[in-house]
Image 1 (cartoon, one colour):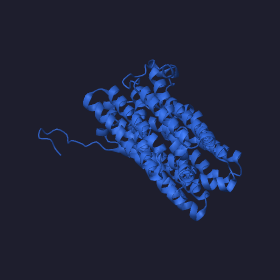
Image 2: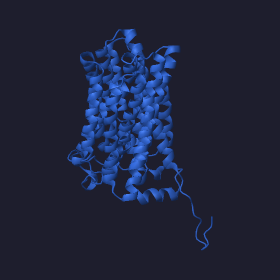
Image 3: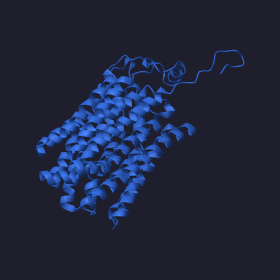
Image 4: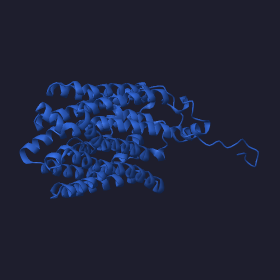
Length: 432
């Protein structure tokens, strides 16, 4: 439309950054579909191979140790070679090992395949966070991180009934093969469409480029040394990392063992297990969306980023702790599941906020900052599966869930010390 003064036509900004966001959401969905597929197959795998609950716990933990130990190398890879190449590479890697899991012939071989699968998935969230750092406006970051993590929980929620459906018809190996192929398709689409900076993307018009550059500044594709000394010397980084350790233990209880818990402890058959195991993860999807959106709106309205991030996440952890206890002690399976829905909603209310903080404090080095945070989170997640198996064998199913409630309280207390408005002081040139 021509302006009355005769100036140039007003051009609406393109919305390529949202296409990038939705493609990232799809990646998050695939990451969780690929990691949760084995949780739903646990009863059938145990029956075929004769694995004990402790052996199965170590198989589940093998993925998480690979995932935890390679967070920082994965984040470094994204910061160093750019998200376009890095994500295409690691998604191809983990998709192949998703399918290769079907070739396992023993506990040791399955542990090895799951470890290598975890090694590939390790870079997913840090690199994806880095991929959004040059595209999403500051006022969109919490919502963007909430939406991407909602995608992961949607993938996790859809997986149990799909896996049960496929297992009943074609055996437990079929879903591993199908989900692995899906990841390879995504990697090809990502490499074709995504660009490391908006200026490199042919579909971004001048108006959208000015909008992004006006908010973030024009950034070149040139890589710089990651300032590890500044990152590892940041109190905020270590506080958020310890908080995420607590979160990692808690959410792993539900991701890795909840289907088995429903089948063994609550007495549900496979079909019921597939349905009810998905409900808390669907509730978590709502928490992911609500947490990121709420913290962004709070920050915009008040101008207080520190309080917006802190308040939203603390409320989520307190809600989780309050709900886990009745979920554990409830007499009936239905009541336990519904309280578990509330607990996972509370846990996930914190996730968009937690992943917005590396963007808030790390800027161009958000991939490396989030890698440190996610390393600690997944050390908690790696300890959880094997420890839970030992606790169940010695004390029954209640103790590991009650421990999760205590860690949720600890995470709420740690969030009270996190200041998302304090940017990491990076030396000139980005050197360590």
